[in-house]
Image (cartoon, rainbow, N blue to C red; front, side, top):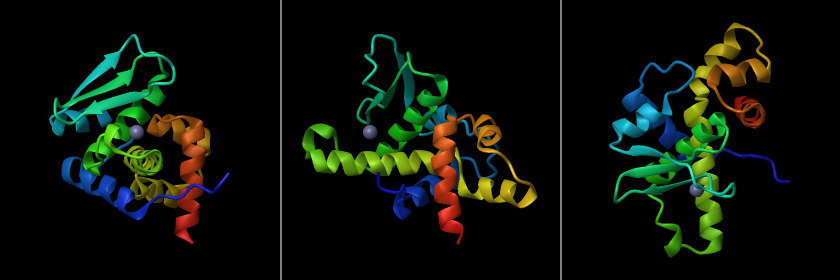
Length: 158
Ligand SMILES: [Zn+2]
């Protein structure tokens, strides 16, 4: 397994979105509100199979999220789909498998930064030591996502 890395541009784009719509963010980040502010309607897909996390139609301004997934996973999916929108990724039908994989990694990096902004992590890290489980509850993300996020954060600080 290769080490996780936050693409600079994807993380920068998430920070830019936050500074525009939530200049003084507090955890947990209200991703649904950000989607609404961007003019998107968020709909729950009840009939989705487990393999589908979410989808987006920039043309119809709709983001669909698998209603059967854990709420924290749904938050990540929504942030991921916002990443595709903000980073102007073309529709998957027009991409090669390699491009799809790249765009999904970028959207994941965007989602990580949006849900757990570096700025907030830095503030918290300056006050006391938090465990990943406490941080995951604070930011309302999965513990797995938080552990990955902390690895990137620590890697970037040095
Ligand atoms: Zn995707």
